[in-house]
Amino acid sequence: MIKFYISRFLRFSISEKLMNKVICIDIGNKNIKIGKFKNLKEKPEVFIDRKENSSKIIEKLKNKYENSKIYGISVVPFIKERLMEKFKIKFFENNDFKEIKNPYIDKEKLGIDRIVNIYAAINLFKKDVIVIDFGTAITIDLAFKNGDFKGGLIIPSPKTQLEVLSKKTALIKMDEIHKGLKIIGKSTEECVSFGIKNVTVFGIKGIIDMIKRKYRKNFKIIITGGDAFIYKKYLKNFLLFPYLTLYGVYIKSLRYENNHKLSS
Image (cartoon, rainbow, N blue to C red; front, top):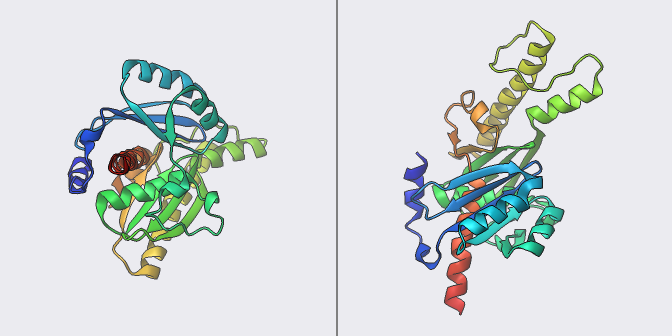
């Protein structure tokens, strides 16, 4: 499925021959995701580690792939600054994505990962899109295929909800959400797990239905992020695209290099 849609993107006049292998990084609130891309036809090699280990893992990859260029985004400023001091990395910022209409009044407050996800989805699918990213928070964003980013929602993720509940209550002490999904639980652990998961699943479905009714468009709905695999089976007709953000960084890196070659 992913390979089919990526092949459609190749109609763009972007030359992948301009670069050798490209290392793309996505630094989130908890983890760093790294994708080593050869081209858009082949799946990237993906590495995931704690964000605190960013420097070590980039050092290893840089030594292994000496001629690779590194591009990235980060929602953690101090780690980005630390990496820029040590490595030659081009970090994309909000104003690098002028193709996407930023709906925020304070433009810099919009998370770069959300812009990159919308950018990737529009370029890969050529449709009006809704992107649901399961990270530390769940973000639900919608945009039209012309780049008109309408905005979105930010919701605490199931894991974040569980952490808060465990800290704020005396009798609920849980480290993880139980597998499976039922309407009713028969233990405290099941009640908490199924309660959080049901609110997440049916909440997302309800939000998507409201968006469709409001805009009367046939949106392509994409789910991505660390927990997307868990919730895919409960969200039918949603496309699972695990590393959408890394693809967005890679597509932007191609255009960035192409523009610089043309202007030089």
